[in-house]
Amino acid sequence: MNARAADIAIDVHGLTKSFDGRTVVRDLSMQVKRGTIYGFLGPNGSGKTTTIRMLCGLLTPDSGSGTCLGYDIRTEQDKIKRHVGYMTQRFSLYQDLSVRENLEFVARLFSIEHPARAAREAAQRLGLAEREDQLAGELSGGWKQRLALGACTLPGPQLLLLDEPTAGVDPKARREFWNEIHALAADGLTVLVSTHYMDEAERCHEIAYIAYGELLTHGTVEEVVEGSHLTTYVVSTENGEGLAPLAEELTGLRGVDMVAPFGASLHVSARDADKLDKAIAPYRKKKGLEWRRSEPSLEDVFIDLMGRAKDNFK
Image (cartoon, rainbow, N blue to C red; front, side, top):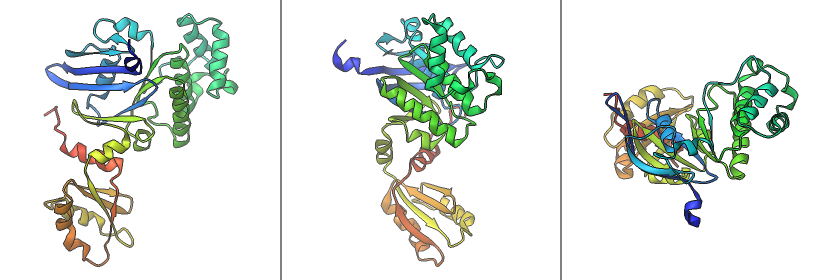
């Protein structure tokens, strides 16, 4: 393995997967560097989980090829699985065991030396030391999340899969969780994470947007935003009144690709700046409306991508 290949955790080409005659992922190719937090975004049913499972050898593609951690995703799946930690959205540990007992069970399951000590160290690392004797079922969502993260990283995986891990967790717990993920990545762990939260997407080193089986864009957040070629204006009124009917009017205009409410304002975007300027020119003269040019946000980009995606259920 050359030096460049050693830096690549995942390298796949042309992955396609269908279920019951419906193509869930179509001709997907991508690379993920080692030590990278790679975020997957997209609507429900878009193929994010299927993609992640194919990337790491947990699901065999109908066509396509590639490697994960240097192993072939089609012929060496068992070897890949030994190096993967998988944290699902639903808490999957034993509710009637304590924090310590859950971690010790995982340590023994993976034949880790000195399981009690390994469990204790994991609890301390994740701030769970004072809750070691508390039943897992009595923990709040944020603490359950920490316990689940501790359990799936205890065996020392090279690749961590997180399937919407912070759904239903409060903002403070989400921030603490992501701090821990960044610490793990800094130590060389590669992380694949699916999320619906824009602030979490912005904390990933790279992101990919998948809609209805198609990979629509990928790269760093800056690359994705720049590659959208969107021009965005923010329009607001003094009291935020009258924006709903204004949004309806603007949505029907030729040259306007997207209108989306953001708090007490609207984001009005298009890929052709000249056509957008002509479309909104009469509205910029109306009293009571304040217009300003703005950099497109990541959410602007994803709303635009979603509007152009074709639903594969139809």
